[in-house]
Length: 226
Picture 1 (tube, one colour):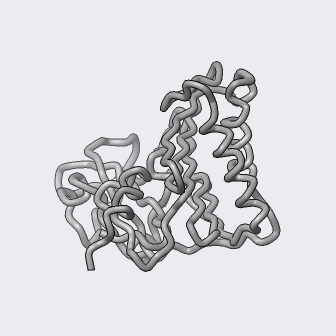
Picture 2 (tube, one colour):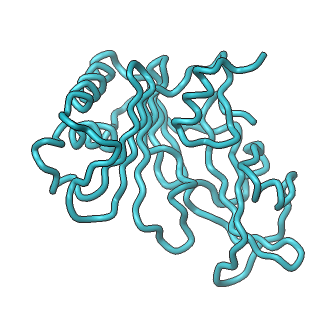
Picture 3 (cartoon, helix red, strand yellow):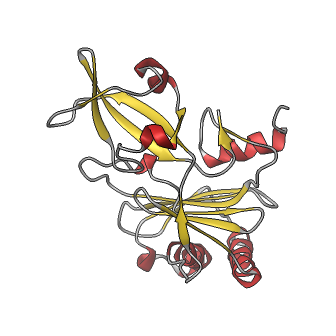
């Protein structure tokens, strides 16, 4: 069965090209991605979302490569929704807001109700009073924690590659997809395939023939497939 158009729209907002969501799986309603200047050997684009809230109340909290999960209490969901409502009411709100000095980027995607796609750039502490609702939501999601958090073990990873030679040696290409496929679009591979590889923001230097690649293995959340 083909995914409903609404679910395809969710994927487009979430920034996951070539991946769709199973109709039977909960869809993300709030996603926060955080990025800054990359460190050597890391790629922020391959990191899991810093926070993702699904329509069934399940939340996923991502780090550099690992992901934790929990089921939110109704009070937590309500607090997030109130922050979002306050953001929507900011007069003249644009798709990008500058918080102050700094290059850290926070991308907020909301698909429940009126869609919201907002990128905030800079230091949260330097934000003007007008953007306090934005700071409140980002702080709430990035600081989220609690005793109910448990490790999430993804069933698959989205493999992508680019031609680039990193300093040092390289590993052999042993993936069940070709470099050309991984260059063209993310390829879904099983967790078993990724077991001995760096994942998330930790990238790998890989050789195939006379070419070298940077390979990323981004953990997928439930419902993602090609």
